[in-house]
Amino acid sequence: MPTSRTVIDLDGLATVFPHGVARISALVALGISSPSAYRRCQPGGPWRSLFPGVLLLGPEPPTRAQLVQGALCFAGPEAVVSGHDALRLHGARITEVGGQVHLLVPHGRQLRSCRTLFVERTRRMPRPVLRKGFLTTPVDRALLDTLRRMRHPMTMRALLRETVYRYQLDPAELLCELSLGSARGSAYPKRLLAELTDPRAVEFSPRRVVQLSGVPKPMWNVRVRAADGDVIGWADAWWDEVGMAWRVVENRLAGTASVELTRTGVIVVRTARNHLLGDAADVAGELRRAYARALRRPRPQVVAA
Image 1: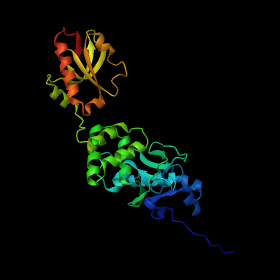
Image 2 (image 1 turned 180 degrees about the vertical axis):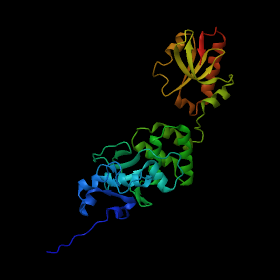
Image 3 (image 1 turned 135 degrees about the horizontal axis):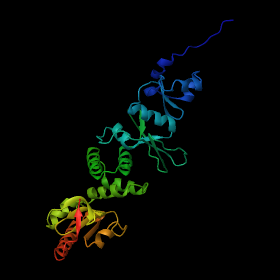
Image 4 (image 1 turned 30 degrees about the horizontal axis):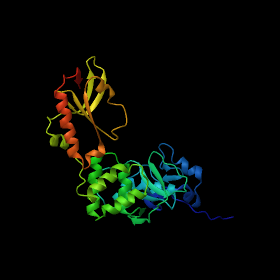
């Protein structure tokens, strides 16, 4: 008895799905068994596994677009792209590439991050916009989500300024939006936005503060050793001729990292990082007074490395 059977060209399936990325469930609906699909993902096989239940229908390492597509397939229809990938899709110039794909999902979703995917649950899901075939956050939300996960101040400042000016974003509105969202990673972006909302709020670099103080140029990023060679501390700036250290810390009162230095007679100036925002003159005066005290006492027996 004749039968009708559809023959599936497995090697041509990549052209059927966006970016050659498919969910297992979609392949099963076409008549491909799940074991057969996963066998093709074994080492040396023609396909790859991107995320649980999501396959790349090709043997080559995934492009960035394929990785983003795979993350969206894995997370489901409510997910939207944010972070660096969203900025790139908006056309922003970004300096960091690669890393985890950043997705936003509704707060009630139980979805875990993995090596190539960062899932952020939020009660404030933005209205998505379509960019180059991907649902992304608006550019302002993408910028803030990117800044909250960055760690390099110079890169953060450059990205913020360029994106604000290029897309004519309102720094005050960005600051308000940042305050309404997650507090994690928001402290430094808030300070950067304060620079743009208040022209008087200028953050001075430690090197600029030293110039303002009038004290001699120090050594930078120095380990300090006792006379017996043991490391007893470190300094962001070190004045070897008088045995004085300057440390820029997140919280002036927190931690005991300078105790061993002070026990040996080193004069240590501790400055909270937020004092470099608008308080540069006060910090410079503190350095001058500390340097004058250091000149009046014998130099401690320590060695700078």
